[in-house]
View 1 (cartoon, one colour):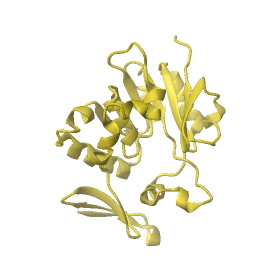
View 2 (cartoon, rainbow, N blue to C red):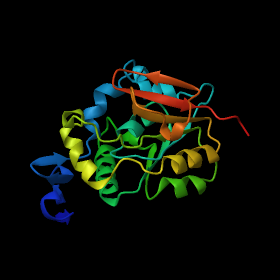
View 3 (cartoon, rainbow, N blue to C red):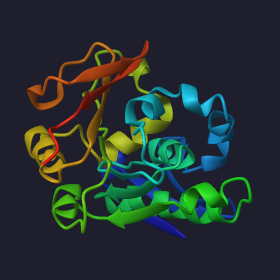
View 4 (cartoon, rainbow, N blue to C red):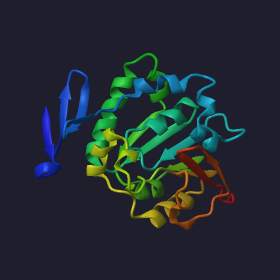
Length: 222
């Protein structure tokens, strides 16, 4: 199966083969593959993940999370492996198709089936989706695509294809406002390590590494 996307030299296409669905173009290929995340899911290693540290909710046995900008779902996989039940929103239909295919393949893998069983994909806009949630999640996670860097090498080659489909977030204020409006225990925001604040929101605290940091907003409980 092949579906063309875009026009001219910028065209990319979806291709399905024996390994599943892939986005290809300009000699590059992008495919959702949760199996390569397995080393990061091991006990001991998982607890050291910065996202897991930032999202951790003390005293909650079955925490819930909403990933508003799911992409290929790798961050959601970390949360699910840490015990969260995760709802993933992805508004770009092509990226959502890649993610859905990756989830199906992972569900058939005994090493991943239990974890991805806690992940539910919703194709659509997360701002509207948050407003329709039946109850507040414990964590809302925001990973708006980072703005383009001056050095092209800073963006991993495989993700150049994603940048063809989805641009950096231009609705920062609406996204943060929607996240806070559902009264989660935390809003966790992924940023470049030295990047500015999303929508100018000063975090309650941050968990940082060399490449990225996670700003955590802890809103007052209603």
